[in-house]
Length: 238
View 1 (cartoon, rainbow, N blue to C red):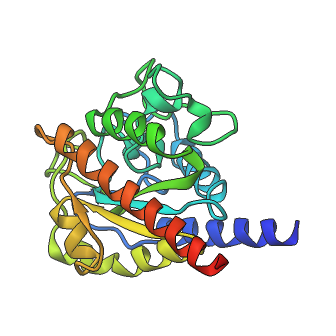
View 2 (cartoon, one colour):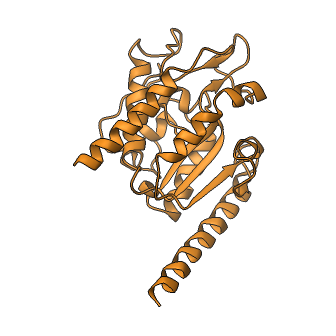
């Protein structure tokens, strides 16, 4: 019990760090900022912070794979608080993925859409990973945690710039420390690979026609990692 409380405290401290980030131009912080036009209510940031806390807390002792992509998107993390995860998944509107695979607790929408936004990346990543690993064994995150958008267009995506990545680099390090049993980190796309200093393998981002390559590459890397872990265990047992 004490260990579980300690892990929860660490996760909450991490979420507090996210919420305390300084404001940046054309950047939306899902866990602190309120979008008066597109959020369903002023409690939306708190809901998203709770979503992330539950999602991470239920994986701190079991995650063996961290999948790091580029940045929060307006169809996904902006409204769920969870990287590469759409409201459609969270609310049970994507049949291939049970919402309890994200986290086991009541779930609420934060956007004004009845069924929430559907994100192409989330619709590719979640169903495929769930065929390869139990959901509690992988965690999705972004090199730049917040949502960068074009000026005056809150429902748009843009690539995070170097300054933004540098200002949040410490959070990527803090994030990885939450998962002591993690055996592998995989970068999704070039931005994530750069943020991880090219220390971990990279796969093709599934967006813009990259779905097939992403599925093949991620499957191969997970298979190689599993083989390596089994080989190490056999060696230790000899």
